[in-house]
Image (cartoon, rainbow, N blue to C red; front, side, top):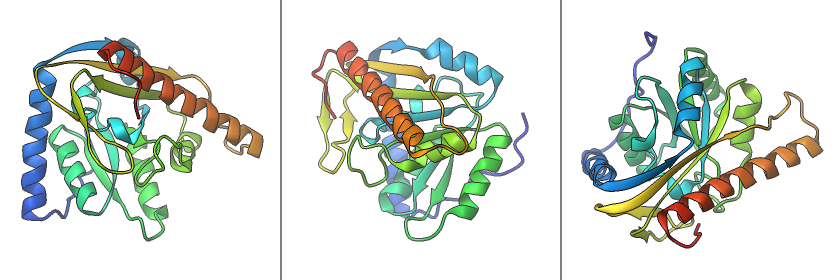
Length: 231
């Protein structure tokens, strides 16, 4: 498929760009030196053969997400907040072949949302953090439900875990990986949906169902990696 747009220009500083280069290489090194247990990869690969999907994950498990995307021929767009950490994350994602798109935390993103939807109509999948960018941790925000409601794409949840890991300070206790490790990567299809005009009850039910699916994937990933369930 020929894409009709270029990758978003990330207005990163020299040191932000350098950080993104270093971290992307480190993440790849962790990926290739880890013995992985995979769950659900075939199902999402089959779905990607039919068209774009929406992939949702908790923010704490984002670091090892980029190298686990299951089909490099299936392009995907990610969303990032245009602050320092967001620009570094977007630089990492771009180096793994994604198409990051900046969303401002201070202004209306109506126009940006239309551009992201255009990307999806052109065949790109969408990858979202369920509780980002500011938390609270593992509390599902409205944005993923809004995106799901606005598209007819299949929805998958994702998580990962590692036997040896460090949790960084911050609202989400971000999982930081170490190389030469044992890890897990879990995908599950979310089979519920959000109506185009949901009632309050349907919205609450969708929020609960998707939150539970995300928690289940996270807990399964931790179990497969041999660690206690964590954030």
